[in-house]
Image 1: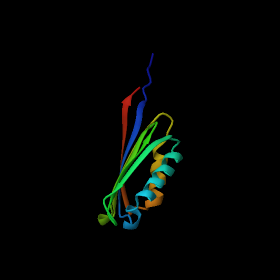
Image 2 (image 1 turned 135 degrees about the vertical axis):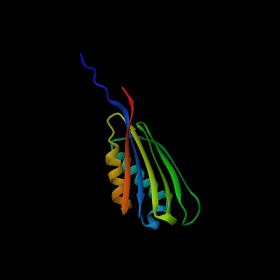
Image 3 (image 1 turned 180 degrees about the vertical axis):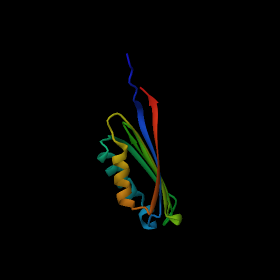
Image 4 (image 1 turned 45 degrees about the horizontal axis):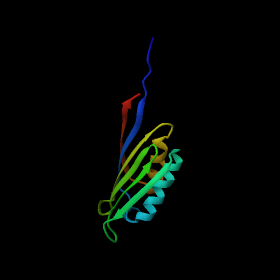
Length: 119
């Protein structure tokens, strides 16, 4: 008798480089982007919190989901954003990353996919 295991969730770690600085400084726009990404992935939004480090400076924020979270940290002075997307259940984190990628249009990206836990 074989037992099939599936991960508790999928965790995507995305490094997005070569992003226009103007896209990385507005906490309200980034909040809206992550909300759009979460909905596209089929996730349920519980709460969000975003912080800017000053005019023209980076943003850090998190979207809490019933399925886990999406967080982002931006460095506009380097054209860089780090996104962290962890989802469980039927949510599809790759769809969230696709939305973020399409909006930020990085010149390059590096993504690590981690299967978290076994059920």
